[in-house]
Length: 242
Image 1 (cartoon, rainbow, N blue to C red):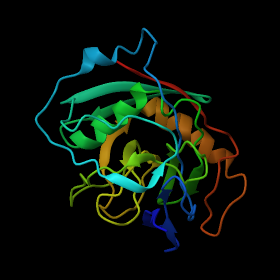
Image 2 (image 1 turned 120 degrees about the vertical axis):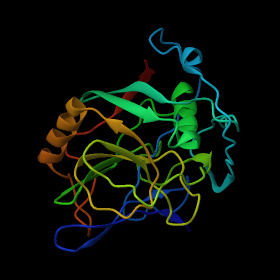
Image 3 (image 1 turned 135 degrees about the vertical axis):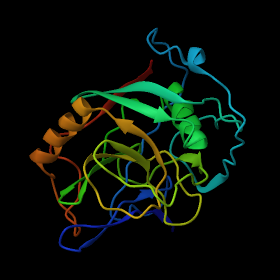
Image 4 (image 1 turned 180 degrees about the vertical axis):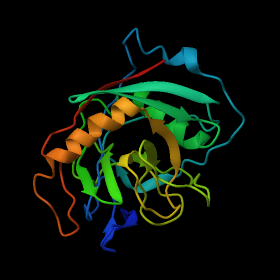
């Protein structure tokens, strides 16, 4: 079965992978997912108020691996343009992010569609990397095992010049074209990766420091590549916009 993978070279030239899998696939060496459904009810998340419909058409293809949790597909026309401010409220504190809907309209459209349906609420980040050149936390899998997704895939929106400095938000994928789903990673230390993962936003300085503390606490049980679930659990509570 296909697994969403992200190759990365650490300082010791060890090949690492970042995976995001379908809802019933093999877990690979890492991945994270989460499921949830239902409209946002929080007054601080007025999702309709941030819609600034663009003209980009998005091909969200059905994922043969299925969905980890029932969720509606995003609208085929991207619903956002420009920069969209949001906050991921987590068990380790709020993570303020800025989504770039001009650079990655289909990815941002999907992320905010899932967030508005509470898809990420109650999910745990399943994979931590804290090696030099590979410092990131992977989240977004409802199964918490790196095997989950929303039942559809997102078209690639990466650029040849993409880099992954601290504060980058980017999508995991299977290593095959147009295979992103709900799993993404947050970079908290400059990370060396090929430009093969859609960068769709940034994390602010306070959020970087919060994740650095999670990284310093280490991995509960490291796999062959040195990554694994963080000793300090990171659970998503809600995602608010504005």
